[in-house]
Each structure stands twice: as structure tokens, then as C-alpha cells.
Length: 307
Image (cartoon, rainbow, N blue to C red; front, side, top):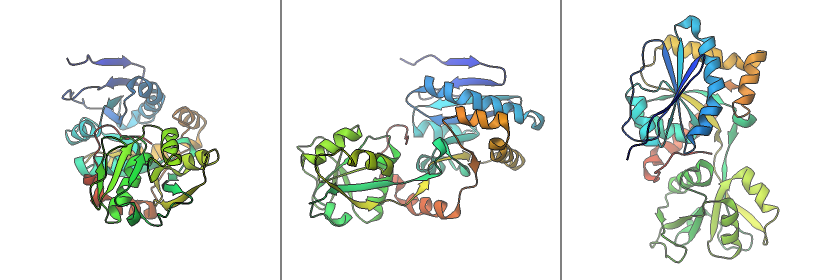
């Protein structure tokens, strides 16, 4: 049964919630549409609305009289909406945006300093006394990822394992055995379970964001050791759909890059998940994403990807 459309109207923004496949709408002239992916759409509406209001106000003289926020349930739906010009801007993690770009033809636009962070990376770690010394040593063993929609706890470390010329094979349970010469993996669904499994020897390795690892490593029962650090990638980004008018792209970039410098914009950004600012994506970070792109299609992702 298809779920009903949920819509809320505000002074500058009409927030449209998309929570099922196949639904689409036609964007009218003068409308800018911002999209993201989330399994918690109600929360995303609350988060994005003040930001969308601000954009609509700033872009009023540029022919934008309405801003819509679209929350899609997964990558495939968001890519489809970008291809069909139903979404103009996409805001999410850089790896998610890279996947979306490949599927839809969208392009990176700006970096977003979400929670004040400009970049991040993941770590793959083992017990300190483990005889695993390099990624190749994970063949025939099991690594615990966080969850299937986590960038730092699954997608980014999985891409790095594939990049190192190793194959991944998902297991149904901890009792399953990896396929010969592959790295078996299983989802723990939270960081604490990853640590418990590793402490008890149920898995040979685990992966999570570097910040999470530092926090959990302080209270583990046995010492841990970082086996591999992924490259840094931008924490969050803004991407634009293919075919969006260049003059509008430049104007949006101008507004976003300047937002942190005025009182109203700084407060809007603070409320937008403590965004410090928007700026150009450094070339070195873009290069790291480009290096991982050839392996994107080999990571099974069935839901929206978050941090």
C-alpha cells in the first residue's frame, strides 16, 4: 500500500516529503528543490526548513520565489529525481553524493562543514595481539561493519578494501564461513556490538569512523590496534543536477559561501546541524573521492547512506 504524501507550507518554503518509490512532481518556474536521503523524514523536514527559507529569501531577486525540500528513502530514488530534474540540489555525505553523481550525472558544488567538520575518515582495526598486519590478511576472515547505510562504518572502509584488490562477501550470520580468498563481512548495527564481537574473537576486525573509534577504544576490555586508515574525504557536500542553469549555480554558491559572514545566515547555519560554513571542495579531497569511484558499483547499498 502506498503511503500518502505529506506536505507542509511555510512563508518561503514548501516542504515535500517523498517516502515511497514512483512518486514525482513537476517543479514550476521559479522553484528551487533541495533533496537529501533519510529514513527519518520528519526530522529532516524540521532540520532543512529554516535553511530552505533562508535560501528562498536570498534568491528572491534571482527569480526564485519558492524552495522545496524533498526527502527520498534511498539512493536510487534520489538519483532518479535528479535525472528527471525534480531535484536541483542534493546535500549529503561526500561518498553518498559520489554514488548519486555516478547514477544521475549530478556534480559536486560545495563542501558543507556539518557539525563544524570539514573532512573525516574511517579506520579498520583489530585486537592488538592479532597477527593481521595488512588488508590482505583479512582474506578468509570476518570484519564487522556498522550498518548498511553508514558511510564511515561501512561504505568508505568497504571501498578501501575493494581498492586494495580484495573481494568482499556478505555473511548471513557470525556462524557462516567466508568464501575462500574473500573478506567476509557482517553488519553489527551499532558500534558497541562491533567492539563486543571483536573483544570476544567473533570477528577478526571492525570498521567505524575515526572519531567513534577513539571514543570506544578508551573503554574496551582488550587493547585495539588500527590496521588501516582510509583517506580523508569531505564530511558533507552540496551537489547540483546536470543541466541546472550556470548563472543560478554561481548565485547559489555565492549565497552559501557568504552565509556564515552575516548574522542571520550564521544563525541559520547553526540551526542546520551546526553547519560552520560552505566552501569550495579542496582538490586533494576531490582526488581521493575520484580514486574510489571505480569501486562504488561493487558495494551493495540498499538504503540511504548517512554518516
